[in-house]
Structure formats: C-alpha cells, structure tokens
Length: 327
Image (cartoon, rainbow, N blue to C red; front, side, top):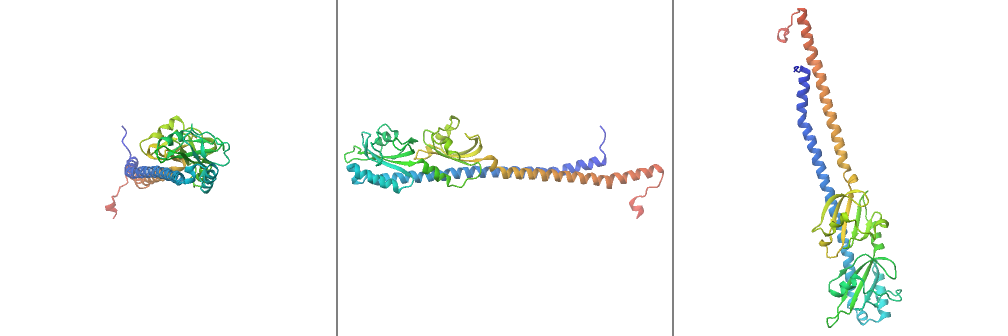
C-alpha cells in the first residue's frame, strides 16, 4: 500500500477534525425536525379539541331550548296553532336552528313548523325512537328534512309526562348550512381541513370542499378513528389525497355523539423544517469544502513547496541550513 503524502495526511486530519462539527449539525437538524413535528401534532390536537368544544356549545344550546320548551304549558297541552307559532318563534331566535318540532308518542306532530302542512310522520326517525326510550338528550344523525329538504342534525329530548308515560319528543334541527358557514369563518392555513361527522360516519360539515363531502360516509380506511378509545393524532393521507397530520376526537370521548378531526397538510406544516434542513446541509457542505480547500492550500504552500525546495537543494549538493543555523 502506497504511503500517504504529507498533504494527504493533512487533509485526513482536517476531515477527522470536522467530524464532531458534522455530528453536531446533523443532531441540531434532527432535533429541530422532531420539535417541529411535535408542534404540528400539538396544533392538530388543539384545533380538533376547539372544534369539538364549539360543537358541544351548539348542541348544548339546542338542548337548553328544548328543556325550556318541554315545560311550557302551551306545548304540554298541544294546542296546534299556538304551539306551532311558539316553536317557530323560538327557532327563529336561534341562528343555528332550522326548525323545532314537538312529536306525539304516535310519531305525528303535536306542533311544529307552520309551513309543514300537512305535518309529516316522524315516528320512524331514529332520533325519535331513541328519545322516546330515554330521558337523556339524543344527538341524531345526518338527516334530510321531509318537508324542507334541508340538510339537518336533529337534537331530541323526551317530554316527560306526569304519570311516567312520555307526552312526546321535542326536536331541534341544527341547520348544516349554518354550520358550514360557521366553519368557513375560521382562519385556515394552506392545506388544512376540518371534518365533523355523526356516529355513523356521515360527514355533517367539512372544510374544504363541503359540496363534495357533506352527506357522504367517511371511507372504511378511516372509520376506525370514530371508535378510538381516546383523542389522538396521526399522520396519514386524507380522503382527498392530501398528506396531513390529523388530530381527532372520537365519538366515544364525547357525549354529543359526534366525531371531529382537524388536519394540517404536511407540505405546509413541515416547510420550515425542510428549509432548516436545506440551509443546514448547504452550510455544512460549504464549511467542509472550505476547510478541505484551505487544508489543500496550506499543505501546498507551507509543506509541499518547502519540502520540494529542500529536496532540490540537497540533490544539487547545496548546503541546507537549518532554521537555528540561519538565525
């Protein structure tokens, strides 16, 4: 094996000396990437939690209206005209509600929207059947109004009778067009998304592209998120094909029976990390190149050329003076 020259040895020493700096640079980039990843997951988690709390307020608001309505003498007596006028006035006073109806135990109107003539039969609706069997509020599923044709989310509450038998069910219908407009008012970063779905996985509201997704069922590949034991985050490719970090609130974690998820596109979310990585690599490579270039120049000027000069003098028989002799 051919022995290394002095210049090569100097370059090797320089390269070895640079290894700790390269290690520190790589470590800093990895730490920065990990911190940014953690920050994006935390942001997704907080956004989904905020959206879930907003939905809880909307649902609780509808429930409070129904509780107040259920103890009203007019409603309990069932005077159709006066009661219908009352529920219409109450629905108009709450922006989130499209309508309010009171249904008899037989599934027909006790009173409801004045324009619902003739009143539709609602005894086969799942929310009515569930509410008739429990004293707790019932959050229904995606519903199309039989008279209005609107997209709705029903909130139902049993009206208790004096002898234990229910007098009927009061229902408040949340207007999903209002909900969509409410979501559109939020500030979104590029590539982010927000999804609200019922317990069956049917999408109630979605940003972006609500016209494409509202009323459709969440794909089977993501349905497991609805029944997860607790909220969480994960990185996946959303059903619109966008890679995202998603924070989700499963149905099991909320008494309101709704699923909420918020996503942030990885391209935008990790843009700062990619920029830091690119700059770090560029600076690191530039530093290594400059150090090796300087080592090459140093070895040539201060080692190779003087040694060659000494060698030439020695071959010619010229005396070679040592530095201390020159002095």
